[in-house]
Image (cartoon, rainbow, N blue to C red; front, side, top):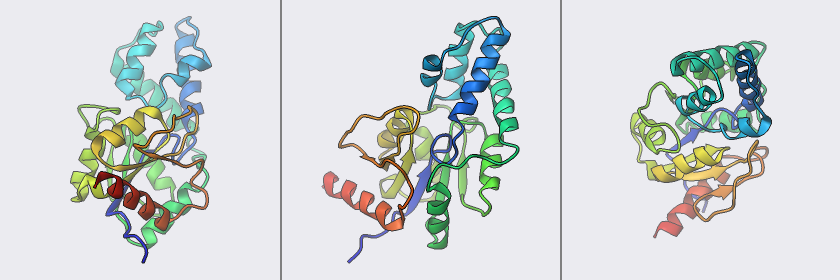
Length: 224
């Protein structure tokens, strides 16, 4: 007998569905350099998975003379411009999204990017993948706080403990685990240490609904 599928799958966006992290780093570098500063790859790695207000504060400390919301809008506009010719998809992401849609598993997009960019990426998928979107401008507390995932589950009307979250960053994984969701880490830019609190998959390629059901079943077994 196969395990039951999750009641919902909650997806991170940047680095999980789309390969946008290098785009954010390019935008950060251009912004800091426009104010006469320098921005290294290592500094960029520190922002992966962060809420945009947290990232804005770090960029301001690096010499960017703008208000936090101005920093966020500048970065977002420059990343969205890079997405105009179509997002670079992460391996297996669209295929898994399509299988989940075909089997009628509800899905939520849980991203700390702002809503305009989240909608842009969601529309580029080519089919209505997400039942709800929780974006960085929708929440009071950003990842690693559990609020984004808890909000998505509440909007879907499902208990968070019956959801599987898919993340690529340490910050995002911390948010998903803290919410109570069964969590899959698919490391991309930044390595994620092994932990019994979540599963690590090297890639989404070749993964399907049954794999997510297995993750949920494993988490429920540990919780008993």
